[in-house]
Length: 253
Image (cartoon, one colour):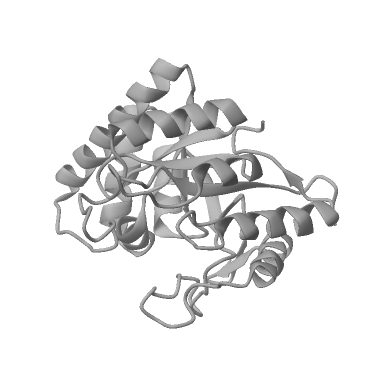
């Protein structure tokens, strides 16, 4: 493989709430290069956010915001009807919350990746994609917007002048049109770490085909709520390193 090929490994973290713990944030942090932190709407709370930002700082991982719908009970995986203005303000609100903890810890905010139903809708709905991109641009135009490879969210970010990152999911199955298979389908989530690792290598080597266009993958997501998240991350790092892929964060560190 081309020795200059590089990819970021990101994980959705900080998704515990109160006394309820979700994921193995401390264990997976040394294995990734970017962390997407829940901002209190679909998951997370002020204490969880503060602790997770400190973990990010400790491990030198790039910090990203993971805003979602205000849906703790449904973990942000249910759509909520909002106007574009409401959606824009909802995103800014969550970015401000995480940015507060980032400033206290002296950790820069690097990227934004929407969560769950919001992410999936933004991939196919330009009005939603534009609202999210506008919110990120208004808050801090230096932030990187992460979206499903080749999706309308990526296109919206490019149109407004944001830096973007095309994302691939080695632990998820895809539909023929390049969208993620809905989670209610039996084979939507891949549970074998070796299969996840092999998918990661294919995504990095071949990219994605969307509307006949080849899209290079900038970042790979390893879901923190997957019961084998740590094993998946280890397997992905092992196979990519063996193939000479450089693993680095979206800000090049």
